[in-house]
Image 1 (cartoon, rainbow, N blue to C red):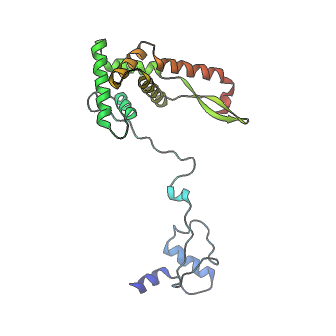
Image 2 (image 1 turned 60 degrees about the horizontal axis):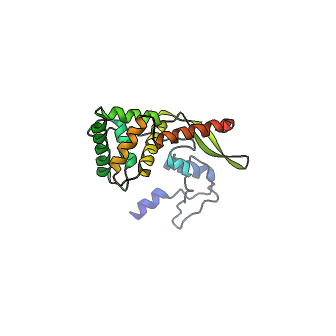
Image 3 (image 1 turned 135 degrees about the vertical axis):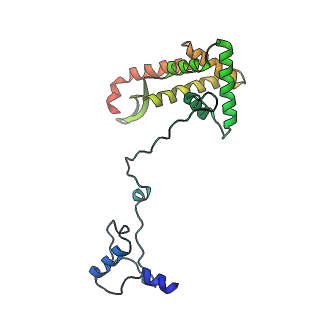
Length: 216
């Protein structure tokens, strides 16, 4: 077994570079995709060549500007709605997904009891009311940090709206997250609440810093 491995890994004993290079290309043509100096390659006692490590960019299989594919958003098992599942994934803490489902479903039940209407329509109206048109992002400009206005896509806008709704719900008084979330969603659907104020504050900040919009 040792002799077989040695014959497979060992190049022919010759000092000619022109005769050694085709041997390695025939052994593994993909391994020599980048230049390697065979004259300075270290040889082990069994005359095997230690190859230089491949670059990390080659191992990852993508360049610096590569983009990862987004996983499609799935729907929840009860309402079969993707927006509800987005709420569940963002209210989730410490892997307790059953608790997250319980909070969302009970909050939707409370909304249905108080408004006597479809809770999904109220939830969708609240998210649409909180979704911002533009947002601000901190960037280093001329030695100081400025809030640069950026355009918000559809998915990113929904994600920001859900985050602001959950943050406003947690800041409300009380211990029951079900009551706080249902109240915040109903207030947002009516055009009031802390989440709506957060959207208006973001728009005002973007308008005040419109001079830095070209630094995107």
